Length: 314
Image (tube, rainbow, N blue to C red; front, side, top):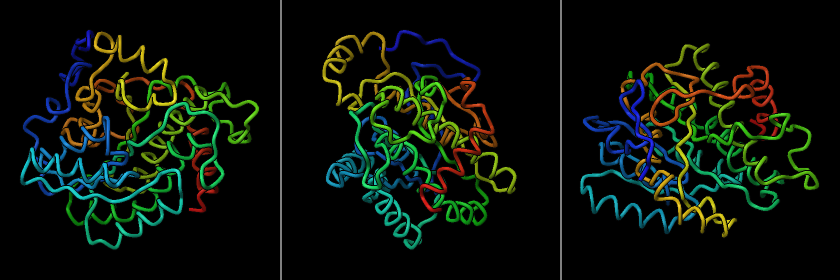
């Protein structure tokens, strides 16, 4: 049970659940993609969006797990609209295949939730030879967002409903390498720190949301982009650290959020009317939070955008 429950300006707190922050909201007619939706806060986000009437696409690497979740959601909410599509964020080929299939599916897209992520593995390279955390947590989502943006613009225009892009970051964005983003050392195995590399990828998430929000506003498009910290949650993100995972599970019921609480801020940013027109913000506990100095650096955000465009050839 989360022990800090003071409500913020939104009327919600760290102890609020995803169902509570979306109570009374009708998402009928909206379509959302949730990446990494087969477990943890991604699965809960998908479940609650479907409960509120949103047509949810589970974009998952493990398709069988996605299908089991689909069955579970439909069993709980018989009129829920849930589809499963394969997506591996660590592979640009997989991202391009997913986007191509989605763009030709005829489905609209109102909400994109970039939720998938990995945390602090030993040094590894992705299929595209990019350090795995940076590749999965940032680069894959950057490419996915770019490839789906025209679909979102078309949907926003046709439906006259604001589109929302929600990027799940972390308070770890405050603890990257000292440079923030090590553009010339992304793949440097010798100086690799699993923890700092995670912080770097989460900083990239906030910078991506901020720069995307700025560009969309400049373009006059009715699509917002925001990032968030879901809270400290015991999920399978910790699978590379068995000792920490064990300790976390032991003390977690006293100091960590549970998964329904962990999914609350994502669902709040995706659906709540209070967030209408809000862009370039970083949410925490279903309230607007504070970004680090690196995260607020507009030059760094623009540099990361150009770097990511070059990496993805997009």
